Image (cartoon, rainbow, N blue to C red; front, top):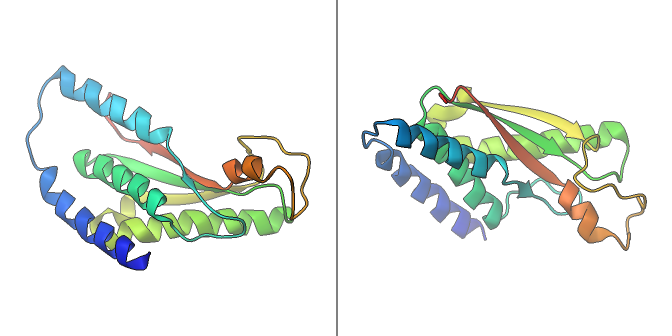
Length: 159
């Protein structure tokens, strides 16, 4: 799995040359806004009590990096979330580890973007799916899994 992530990371280095094509006109602005909206709706998901980036998550992060490369004024905040199992303090720290792992992956591919990537954590406070059962062996594991994520919010993109 790590070899695939290394290959993806190397591929992202190649992307830096792709974004140098000049783009003009209102259609470009509309396309940018459309792409940002699509990527803002994507998420990186995690296993129970994990903060490592899976291959599917790496693909999403590559899309985020491409938006940053194509928009020199853009910034992104990576917000980590957790399910409702564990204490509030633990879940805040876990959300922070998830956001930090996403940032670390992005910076390892494109170091010059580091100062345009911020991280935050909401812990379990903003679930996508409300789950009453907070036991470790919950029968609602699929619902819990939707809450273990990193989300993206962009700023500085001209509309």
